[in-house]
Length: 301
Image (tube, rainbow, N blue to C red; front, top):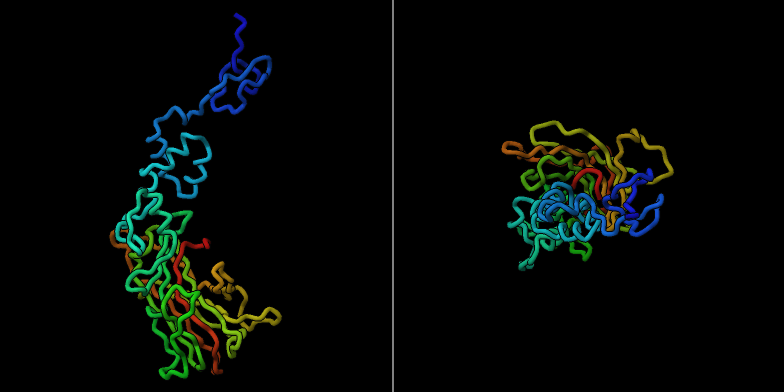
């Protein structure tokens, strides 16, 4: 007799599922303490299964919803779904035992070398998509055949043991390819050339370099990059065609070569090719260091 019930925001009687206001007076009544959200009444395995259909980023965010969600996110069901199907062949060196799939997932998000050090591999942390960088050892380079034209060097900041430095050449052309099987199917990728510039360099300022990426046997869309771009002159080529270089968090520079959609599937594994060619300048050039060609999901860093 005289018992007070929970009320909703309109002042009518009834419990309020998931309310965080416990014991507060509202419209002549009090909200019943210990109210649960609709998800809290589901079995934890069911919540884990639902979360596994989202993304790694969404899963980490949902862990803050409640203790039930926090526990559900830790489930092996969730992180098994986020790992690529071939994850057992991708365990990063040094080889070690991972107690949980979540631990393995984040270990794979740190880049590591594969295929005898010719490629760098990692998972994009927010999506679990595969990312790859081809080392210059996987590219063909026509900078001249004599040691005074270019050389292999080792620098601490590089992912690879040796990378090429342009010393003094007139012709500038390089490219390469790989099978898309190593990438995630159903994903839109961008390709980038990753490089550094020496303090002492010449012949590269505002020089348009033609680049392209596409599937083998198909015509590649033509775009232009500039390794050493000034900001105070009017370019001789349309601005819309120039792919701007940007400085990366790791201190290297990158310029987008182009993009493509990797369909994947049973018959969707194809050879992807890239090209980087100086087609305009007969001048001598020096001072650029190429780390490799990087493939990662479009518009993500």
